[in-house]
Length: 442
Ligand SMILES: *Cc1c(COP(=O)(O)O)cnc(C)c1O
Image (cartoon, rainbow, N blue to C red; front, side, top):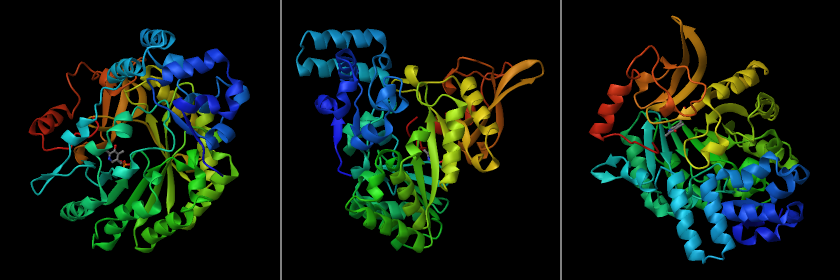
């Protein structure tokens, strides 16, 4: 398939544009001047059901909607557009709205880069003992910008914190000096935006050097849901698969971490073909998805997604709670409701789907899973558990928050039983004060 891409500047050339009213197009243009979007013809031709627009979940995931902006901000942008304000004025106003929507400025990762041999290592994150994240410079863009993903610092100011393959010597030394690292996760953006030759420059050094403690290379990608042709008919499909095979043949495990938001993304023959090709290299595919209002906020959708994944030999891995950035008010699902959706989907599937973990929040102390509500000593509580922790000793310890139907993120929860803080808080404060820790995105 020939690749065509659509964003704000050529929105009106989209073949399906006639399915939208002039008002709907204007709304996308106004909201889209703040929330960046980019989409390709696989998504518009194969995934979006245009007869179901504007309710269609993939349409919502793709095109910015009026309600994704706070209403005052939308109205302000609308006035600027309608008064034919200059592109400079519109951009300034948009930047101001963005800075309020995204509390995680670009410099943060740079600030938190780990220090090694007296030098800061840009472009890696080592928050959890076993797993190091690598952000290759050329991989900090994506097959499509989803409306719920607010990573534009990543899509614009890449050189600030991403890594060049020229630094791979340092990374190899770092992994060697940290034998507790069993997993390197190459992430983005989407690392499969890189041509295979470029991707190889990040992966080959990890295979060529003697790193006996390193067992797994993970690649986080949404190519299966957004451009499966990357591994079927694209020019370097075969060389990419050959690279995957070299990982397996070197004795390391390749975990392909695939993002799917909706079962419709698992329906096309080309997806099945791409999945089969990945598996044929010896890799395993694990899947993850955020829970999103208007897109997949029902147990039926999740159960169907997991079942289809099992049928295609993929392993359900994570349900994430949408993080507290961007258009969170539009997409967020309160934690108790998230648990209910998860539980009903989990109850409705066989044990083979129940490898999935979640709903989970990636937050400051670690990855916090919502185990569910309970009543203890006459108090309603929300049971939580850390599935990753800054201190490995925190992992798998249950802890309890006061029951709260409305809380949608970790920082809105209060400890149960009148406690002042959660069990890890003092240690966390010390870690952050000492500043010798990688604070990561949080
Ligand atoms: C989720 C995450 C990982 C991987 O955790 P697993 O439980 O091994 O999947 C590693 N580093 C960071 C910063 C993460 O957020």
